[in-house]
Image (cartoon, rainbow, N blue to C red; front, side, top):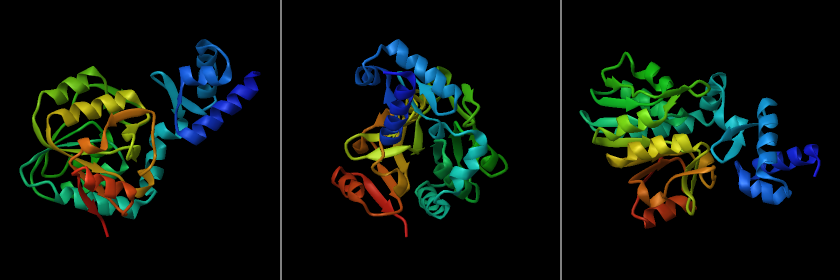
Length: 251
């Protein structure tokens, strides 16, 4: 298969699935994994995709900092309502880990307007919101992902493992009944799992655009979260309740 045809096929699979795996794609295209990796390098330099461990995701799933504001504007009213409800589930004085993302940014804004709490976050966007509020703010060490302003890596995971917290507010690229909670990048998934491990309860915030989507890397099963806050009744909310997840659907 010619390079141009391979590149078109890779882009088609990315559009359809949201991620591609080196091994699966090599078998599909009838080429070596090395050839697929070279194709990934070329497509990444063209701004089509971003390479992650074992595969690739669309470039838009790891948006540049300038695109964060664009993502924040998408379904902003729904995210604001979700953020307010999620923040209302967190009591004064509780210790909270806030995941990165545009929905958790609204959680941070709601918390900043409330009482004193201890907040740990891996997202510098959230730091800007919380820095001048009444919360006691902690930022873990780690590797800064320049395009997303988030922290990741073994030091971040080790820091989160040191503390027992009351709440972890989890965001996701996709939430599916079968696949569970997923993210494009395995490094991000590892940080989220570290935060979940010592949290007394995990609150998943996800607007309806994330429901039914499956990204490349698994974070956890749907049954592993304690609370789901979303903005519409779907098959997933019904399945979550059957699994014993507490579900809040915003107005």
